Image (cartoon, rainbow, N blue to C red; front, side, top):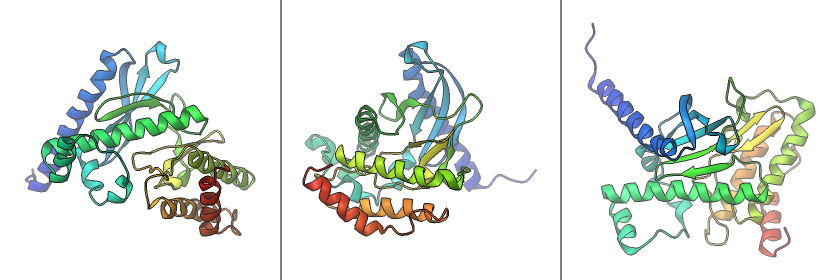
Length: 262
């Protein structure tokens, strides 16, 4: 048997540690009788793992998704100060701990990101946007609507089969959502075909921890333009939206939002 490298051993230990942290987070949803069973992993990455769970009848859905963030999420956003511009951090002790990058500060910052995503999802779902319905959150996890059917989760738009006949309507629906987000003072700030789910001709936009408020974040205009550029770049593969310019679209949408005309 070949020896286990230090790197591999470290990775395996880290994975086990993350799995245990995920189960502790999910246990709160079990204790609150929101789910009855954890079934399988839907998606796993360095930043978060999403689990398919059997929902308690009180949720009114058969399954729910538990999105559990890892400590690596904080590390991946150490260069993400652009997203935190204008956010309310908390009391002075928390703010000092976050700036000092203490262990407590890292935990507090992660909790702030998770709580921020939950609040944004709640606002947008209530407004009628195509986002998952959020049910509950802890300091490290969000329980939300599971997209897909009994056998599989919905595909990312990047890899989903989209017919030429549907592409034009799909782009219109995404642009409608971006406009609705702005009306609710939200810019996704990381929108692309990778965080849009598509199943049965229905789209759902996911992943909002980095979403920014255009009222307080000075980088919001360029983040809005980047979202539009990413979306149009994807649809160019389907020969849709080729005449649209993301900079012009972002400028017009920003003007409508600024003057309360959305």
